[in-house]
Image (tube, rainbow, N blue to C red; front, side):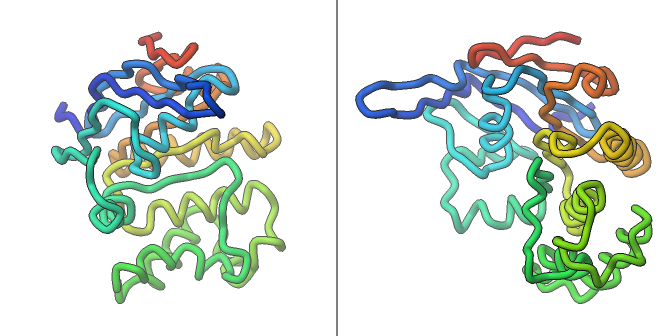
Length: 224
């Protein structure tokens, strides 16, 4: 299995007044292509911070991040933009759909940024795959929580990224919708051999992963 993502002694500190708060401490991990990896831990353990660093949405205080063979640690914002839009997809707990765009347009948006002439066709196919073709013209405020998250997952997939980061993707959903979203992610992992790194505090969801890392007090350990 080839390595797709690697971190070396990754740390993140925040300054609160004169006080330094260490959120992550010397985190090292390796994720292979096609793996479904879960980062578990209680709320406030640093899961969201870690995913933000791994995906290039935030920068570490120290350490290195190597994604698909490229060290992205010191890249400029302009250099990171194509990495975020082509190599990675991100699914947020709070959905982060654009309110003024309907479902189809939200999914098309990342592909349109790349000038993909097939953006609409790809978005329509993804909506069909997740059973939301009839909601293509609906705006986020007209969708249920489960529907919003499915649209958000489609948006993360439209540019066919090598790795998908999911931050508590079921955190705002009831148990029925949560199960549906996890099964959707598992089917994407199995059918497309997609690499998924998901943060969750839900032990039942974590058990569905290939490997589990656990974050506690900013330090990462291997559970399985």
